Amino acid sequence: MFTPYLNFNGDCAEAFAFYARVLGGEVTDSYRFADMPPMETEGAPPLSDADQQKVMHARLVVRGHELMGADMLPGFCADGTGYRQPQGMSVSITADSVAEGERIFNALAEGGTVGMPFAPTFFSQGFGLLTDRFGIPWMIDVGHPPA
Image 1 (cartoon, helix red, strand yellow):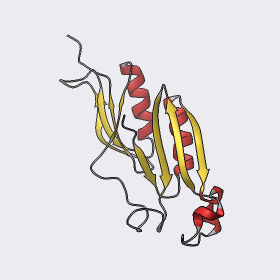
Image 2 (cartoon, one colour):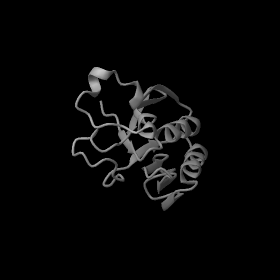
Image 3 (cartoon, rainbow, N blue to C red):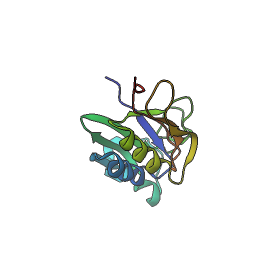
């Protein structure tokens, strides 16, 4: 099984609440850095009050599928640099209908950047590319074109 894990620059809680509304899912887990027990923070860099309120881990479930994410802080990621905007990947959503695909696309595109407007293509009844206002790249697809 594959589960996308998204990195955010301090707005993970806002993004996951938005995704839950748009996609009809539920945030089932959300932990702040302040929730970490003291024994797990030994040797970790000190956190400001603002950083303690950022999301250490969140989980969204939509129709049995998971999306996870966190705010990336320096010292709490593998290379120690903190947040970097995603590159070389997109989260792909297959919608049940053209209307649903267009609704999801338009909601995610609000305040973001459209790379390819949602429209029929030779391979899909509806397809579009965008980067949402949180910096996450998305592909919205409806499926095979009508025969």
